[in-house]
Image (cartoon, rainbow, N blue to C red; front, top):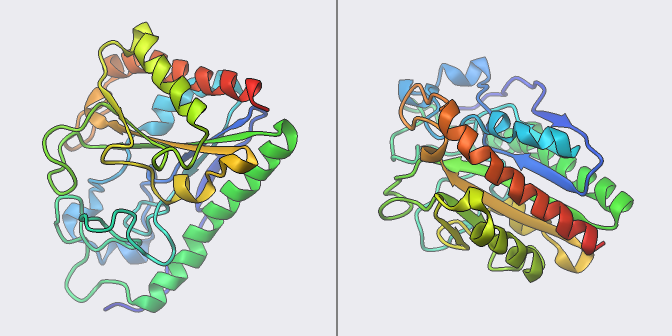
Length: 276
């Protein structure tokens, strides 16, 4: 087990907006501290489990003046969508941890005897996890103070086939509202209505609260009784990119998907304006 302090650096990117929505992207980071990189396997250094290209895909939100927060460092450093106590979000199911030691395909992340010990895990929580969550909390409070309502949209993507977590092919769009506990049911219904009625959604499969019901961020910050609503969208990467290295962004696929993302964001904005 390795003991050592990681290099502190800017841990996230943030753009503030004036709308009722904050978009969080906790798994898009690709940076690795130099001290950590030398301890990782070659496969882990290729970052197979990154939520690739989401900032580019969600660039459509610029016209809505929405706040956007996304991680700088890879989930190999720390998973920002896990509880700091490292308790399981899906009891009884196979999951990766706060500071994962294997990939989604169960390949080792660390070289022999190079895994972090508990002291290092606590240091990573302080250096990387806490700043990101402090920013989420502060921004939701700011948005709520202005609008009387706040919506947190937690954006994710994953390979369409991950046998470790689910059988077969994942639906294209996987919405999670912690079984409708992280947002008002009428917001979930508005999103589902958009998926049913929008011409831009015709070619995409979807599910609510399926395999992905929402991670720590959705469950922790969603407080509909305070008019703070959280939704996770886990998208299949096959609908906008190549799923094998070098994980190339597919412009043609993305151009088809972006109008639907716009429809979904507009649905949230309209709902927020009606429910202030």
